[in-house]
Amino acid sequence: MKKVAKHLEEMGQAARALALYAEDLRRFLEAHPLSAPEVAPEVEGAVRALRALVSRLYALEARLKAPYEDNSAEALRELFGEV
Image (cartoon, rainbow, N blue to C red; front, side):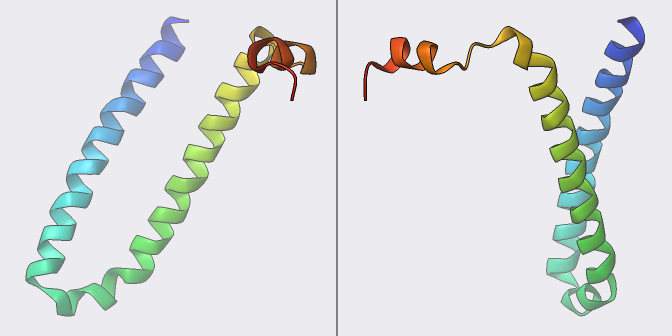
C-alpha cells in the first residue's frame, strides 16, 4: 500500500504542476498569439494523452469500487422506489 500511496501522491503533485504549466502557457499564448499555431499540435496531443489517463484512472477506480457497491435492480428500486 505504501508504494501505491506514494505513486498517488506523486500523481497529485504532477497534476498540480501540470495545471500551473498549462496556465502559464495559456497566459504566454494570450500575449504572443502568433506562437499558438506552432504549438497547437503538441498541445492537442498532450490533451488527448491526459484525457486517456483520466479515463484509465476512472476505469481503475470503478473496477476497484465495483465489488463494494450494490447497483442491482433491487437496490435501485429500494433507493428510488418503483418506477
